[in-house]
Image 1 (cartoon, rainbow, N blue to C red):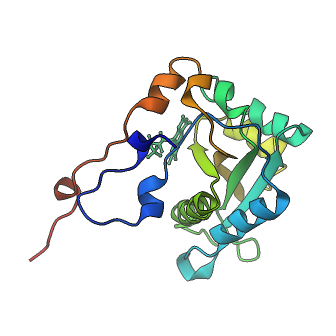
Image 2: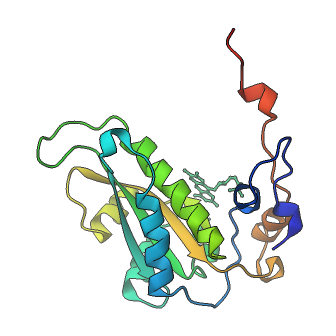
Length: 192
Ligand SMILES: Cc1cc2nc3c(=O)[nH]c(=O)nc-3n(C[C@H](O)[C@H](O)[C@H](O)COP(=O)(O)O)c2cc1C
């Protein structure tokens, strides 16, 4: 892993968070079914409003028809590198509870929580993830045969990391650019 990607933090943030980043260079090593299931199970242990768990994960492994179908929904800027991922995972949000049809106002929030958890579990197992919102939602809904109360939220490219040199521009430069965040003082305020 390129050390320039490790977050330089103002405080002692745990390594798992400092080391997570969104790569585009993935290796030919496959992700086993057991590893993938562990990663997805970790996602389900995220908190959610009322423990409603308004998420589903629809995944496909590289080299399968399902993978090619999900890949085809991605924006032109995502396909050239995401095609090398070992797996693509569509995160699905459940907007209304199926039985009561009651709107869940926090479904997006909770799918994001689950996504965070699964990404950190993945990294613990040396699997990196790259979230994408750049995809055709309508097409992805059709590919995944989603019912009317469900919505694709993101597609995550998962895989073992590879050399940045393998990438073409502009992806190579992005892969080698250090990560940055707004200083904590600009986003946190103490209310007296
Ligand atoms: C909701 C969401 C949508 C994103 N969509 C894309 C995308 O379509 N293509 C892409 O290359 N990166 C995408 N990203 C990745 C972000 O650009 C990336 O997380 C951000 O630049 C911070 O970099 P880091 O994850 O390496 O810390 C997305 C991230 C999130 C959370």
